[in-house]
Amino acid sequence: MPAMVRQMFSFRLKRLALAAVALAPTLASAEQVNIELFDGQRAMALIAEQLRFTPRSLDAPGHQQTIDFIKAELAKAGVNNVSLQRWAYRGVDRKSYAMTNIVARLEVSNPRRMILATHYDSIVRAYADKTNPNGPMPGANNSASGVAVLLETARVLSLLPKPAVGIDMIFFDGEEGSKSLGAGDPQWHALGSPYFTAHLKDFYPNAKPEKAVVFDMVCDRDLKLKPEPSSVTSALAEVQKFWRAGAEIAPSAFDPQITTYPISDDHTALAAIGIPSFLVIDFEYEPYFNTTQDTTDKCAAESLQAVGRATLQYLYLP
Ligand SMILES: [Zn+2]
Image (tube, rainbow, N blue to C red; front, side, top):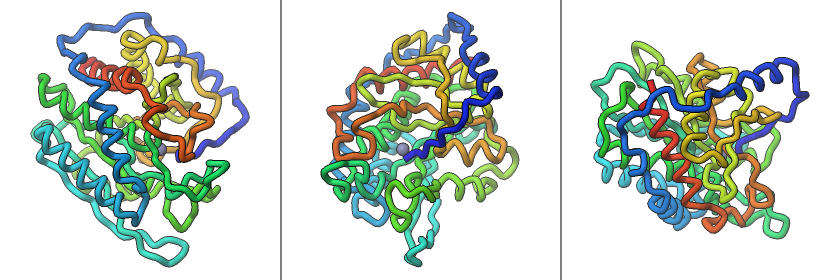
């Protein structure tokens, strides 16, 4: 999805908005890392490859093909510590769905940990499509773009000095909810990230990860990323740091103006257990959002590159 909850613009949000806008004009320190190694064209190709597996929703053959693809790309980037967190989810139709979160750990010897995450499942059908609401969901932006950013980031990180905090990349399953709930269902809730947080000690027996960044819908040709209110509540300082890095790299894509509505996504479950977590999303994607028109031509290599390079810069900021 993710789901959007339009709410009255409360005084509290206004206060947070002012805080988010107060960004320092320049980076605190320039790190000697070549963030330009992140290649937007490579990321675009990673989107195109995922779309070959469409539909990639739960139970579709393309779902497993996407898992295999992510594992293969991680292996190419030299990421060998990859776990599959598997479980069965029983839908309201009583059917059992095979679920898989993919957890890739970089620099496992580093006791300090942080999460970079996205979801790889796509919605079961293009329900918002006026002419073909039962059509398969290509999901170039929602969901292949987040996967592409993570995989290209993994490749680049293998070429760079190690960041101070060890990174766990998580490719969540079931962000779009279960097939049985139906696309666009108001009862929607993410499945993979709540399962992960309920079993957090499987991966973090001693201490929670220090923070988490979640990417979703980040390839729009006209990319405008705005801080999201629940992210600002959970991780204000990190949001400021990320947007500051982004504004240095691609000023037009990083708008410090906070969105007027909260958005539920995989950061929601992470924030709920006290991990400072924020969402990087451009939710203004009409008229293509969850339609058969969410295809690669709506994406731009420049947009992916802006997000990827901002992420790399952010990872190396103190
Ligand atoms: Zn999504």
